[in-house]
Image 1 (cartoon, rainbow, N blue to C red):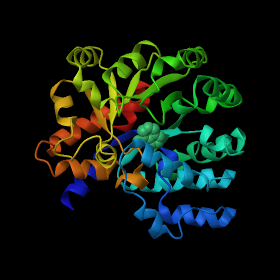
Image 2: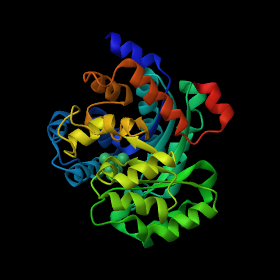
Image 3: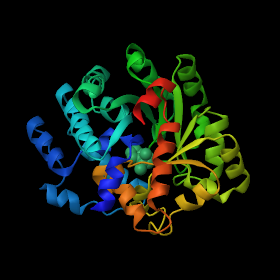
Image 4: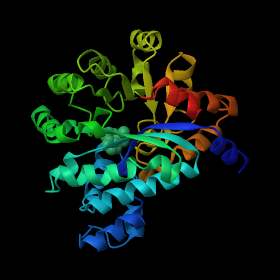
Length: 326
Ligand code: ES4
Ligand code: ZN
């Protein structure tokens, strides 16, 4: 409890959270009922029992099925509000929220519904929750580059509502370079660029994300440690890495918090922060991730404070806003 209070009191920015991964089981069932959507589980308890994953794909299979409960503007607004409630309660001051438009447009939900719903909550977060927030549109890498380009075209009317683009979903066998053109187009629109890399994929995908996509931040990046030259480059260039400890354990990328590479990443001088990824699925929000780390003596309170400071250094914030937040 003392740790929880300390963690809550440290200002934190969350830079790696998928809004579709914040739908708690009870909320999923409430939305399913409201929209007359049938989920392949009988109850919220049965859904929770399905949260035992072997790898990224086994998680994504559940995640995309639950996402189907979202159909209206109010649904998108409500899940953002529910996430802000929990994030604010854990001391989060700034959020850069990922969303996966293709997981909705592919089911017939118009881009306008997604954007209007998310934006109604994001645009009011300072008033409602005392935190700043922005949106990062992610392309589903397993659907390919042409689908990503089409998604960016559909998002063009809403570019003033998003701060950047990202790349997520199944990583193995989907190297970043295929998305060169759509990331270049996003850059020309003035958008920031991030990419999931080195979560399950090899260090070479991290290099590609930097060189072919111009990624300014790497999501996960834990496998970068397998390549000493890449580690040296990431340290030298101060490339931010958004690390998600509970996610990596739940998806079996690492065996335990004690085995997690975060400590070695800090020792190597990397600009790492702690994030929740899909908190409804992986055992907690950003504060919960820090509390889990603190069970390991490597992550004392001073180290947690450094990780939180790093989150603001890694954020897409102007200097005045950053100074006001920390
Ligand atoms: C994700 Cl954990 C993770 N990895 C890649 N893509 C994702 N989308 C949602 N969660
Ligand atoms: Zn992620």
